[in-house]
Amino acid sequence: MRFAILSVSMLVLAGDPLSIDHFVAAPDCIMPDPHRGILSFAASGGILRYRLDAIHSGGRVRAFSSETDRTPIPAIARSGVADPGAASDVVAYRLTVTGERGVTVERTLPFRYRRAVFELVPPATHIRATSGGDHLARYETAARVAHVDSLSCRVTFDAPVEGVLSRAGTADIVTISGEPHVRCSVRWHSTRRARAAGTVEWTARVTDTCTQGRIMRTARVNAIP
Image 1 (cartoon, one colour):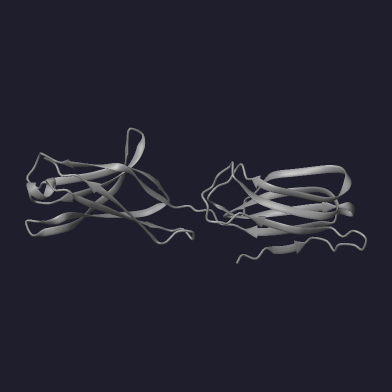
Image 2: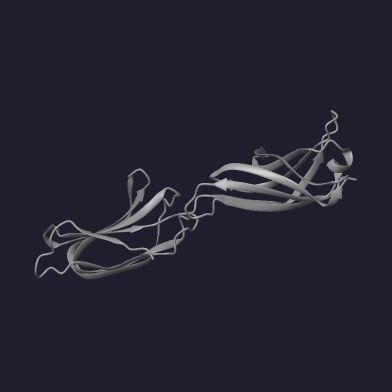
């Protein structure tokens, strides 16, 4: 359970019961979306203005929603407030409500956005290099990739081929026609193995508090006739 941190910049004077009644966010670890409403709040007292700030990693503060009234109002409530600048480095949101005589109350809500993304976009292709004698095979597919620290891969045949069932390859991220692809290159030292059908497994290692340390994805590849 997440606990909000409440701070009051001035003592609330008697007769001026300014308060933040609630300040909540959608479940965290979602992907940043500038159109998705994620914040809701309610405050009461002699309210003159409110402001919502996003706090980024490193301490940068960005205001993105505010309202000011000429005369105090008894209460205010907003729901489904979106952050137009939602980004993966946001670490918290802060609500500041100001009342009469400069009384201000603040509440800070820690929040995590998901950073790492590793999704394959099928189908996968299977290519065998025809030059040289090492029978290099390449397996690749389009992918959605973000904040991946390292990538590894392994190809496993449907059944052993010449006594070999699987082998680790060299994985990398490449750009093809302007789109990211992941590739697995394996030197089989056999034409039959280089042409065989099987399954490619890519393992992405990520640093993200919202995601496991490894994300594994598999793709099916057909045999080369």
